[in-house]
Each structure stands twice: as C-alpha cells, then as structure tokens.
Image (cartoon, rainbow, N blue to C red; front, side, top):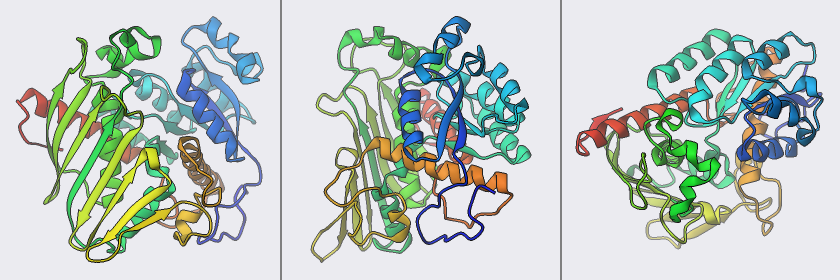
Length: 392
C-alpha cells in the first residue's frame, strides 16, 4: 500500500510509503522545471527518460539527469515497452515534448498501463484528444494535464468562494494573458521558439494553443462554468510569422458573457495572467505576477485581500497546497509542485485500488485537456469566419 490505510481527507495530503518513480519524455527547459517541482514534493524521483529524438543525445543526457545509460532511451516507444516490463519501472511519466508528439507519446504509455501527466495543449486535433479520453477510461490510468495555473493556492480559494456563493450569480468573466518575450524580431530564430511557430509541430495556432488555453481553462475552473461559445480574431502584431502572436476573443459561458485576450507582444508584461470574475453580490480579481494575493469584494463592503500563507484563514483545502507562512512568497515552482502532489495522490490511489472522494484532488484531467483542444479548434474556426460566433 502506498497511501496510509486511514486517510484524513480534510487535512494535509499524506506521505506515501515510498517515492513514486517518474519518467521524463522530452528534454527541453520545461522538463527541468517540472522535474524540480516533482522532486520538491518528496513524493517523486526521476528514474528514467527519453530526452531526445536523437539516440546519441538521449544517451548523452544520462549524466545531466544522474541516470544510468540503460534508463535513458532512444525513443518514447522503446521507453514505454522497457519500463512496463521492469519490476522497478516507472509509475508515471511526464510528457514535455512539442505538441505534435503528445498524442503518440501518451497513447504508448497508456497502452503500457503507465499513468501520464501531459503538457498542454493535450493534442493538435480534437479527434486525437477524444481518443485519449476514451483510452484513459479504457485503461483506467490516471491522466493529468498541466494547466498549472489552476494549482496556485489563491486560485483554489477563489474557486471555493465562487462555489459557496461568495460573489452571487456570476454575470461576467474576463481573463487575459499578456507576455512580452516575442517582442524582439530576432526571437523567432531561437531554438525553443522555432517549433512554436511551426504549424507542423505547434498545430494551427501558436499563442492560442500555448497561453490562450491557460486563460480559457482558468476562467472555467474558477467560475465552474463551461465555455460554450466564442468569437476570436487572430493577429500578428510584430514581425511576420506563420502563426498568430495575439488573439482577442469574446466568450460566453452559457448566458454569462466575457472576454479573453492573449499576446506575446506586450512590453512590460512577463507573466501577465489576470482573471476577473464579477457577480450579483461581489467580485474576485487575481494576477499571476502577484499570485499570493486574491482580491475579494462584497458589494457595499470594504474590499478584502486574502493572502496565501499558513495562519491567514484560508480554507483547509487551500491549506493543503501551502508550504510557507504569510510573507514568504511562493510561485510557479510551488504551483507545479502542487500539481505533482495531487498527481501522486491519484497515482497511488490507482495502484492501491482505492476510490477517492470527489473534490479531494483539483488537478486538471484528460477531459480538461480535451476541452482545451476544443477551445483551440473553436478559435481557429471563428477566426477563419471573420470572427463569427462558433460553438464549442
């Protein structure tokens, strides 16, 4: 058994009987960040990887990851087969490859009975996303998707406030993700950028599929409302590019209107993800660059600012995701750590054959990933029809 026999679902997440064994597919910058976060939770150790499509480079990665050469594979297919056959094989894998490889990678590991945490967008095509949803149900595997912005403690607190009626009936939702790293014209030549602008790898979008999906997921996650319709305009605001660097969209979550904007050409914005949700009795505002604070207003009452940290009256469910006291900031690595902590709980429960109560884990699942792909598809369809309204 990995989980304790008696679980306190109201308290902190429990320690496991052993660290889970994690495999890494993809050797770019994001894999290092996620591996750091996973190790920080003290629930994972990296034991294997397929770090490059070049077999020589894959083997050469062994010292960088402190791994033996026989656990550094020349391909994800080879890794899935070999690790599934080992007694000490990986319990789960993270997939951090370019978008066009997500489907084949995830499929290989699911079919090998290995749990998956995949970067977003889940796939480049709706049909592939739906196939992964079906395969996840068929295999019974855990499948997480890295909408990591939903793993900040203050976002979980905001979601609880909405669910508890704290702002009344929602009447509008606004979300934006403003970045500036693509402002210089020469940035498109950087190796980690080239594939993001290549339709063969990034899919039909660049900005929308990368940061726009974060914004769309966050709006639905906190509001508890599915995105049902949108109209979107794609723009190239800087140097010519084969894919968009900016998107402006009008959204509807049922009868609730809203806006969604994303760009990589907004000088002065690095992590400019901002969410604002307003209702009949109040509103919530959150800013990634000030992620420890959540502004909560009840109309006619003084504004409140809820801050992340132990001992500040946040809910017990939020406390599970907090590591330090007030005044000691946490950031994106800790949010990744929260995602990998919840993923560990889900993987351990599957291996133990245990059912977990609804709502105990808030991590994004494969169905959330599929919704993200539908969002991308809807944006593409709308933009091709002169920004007409389309349904998801």
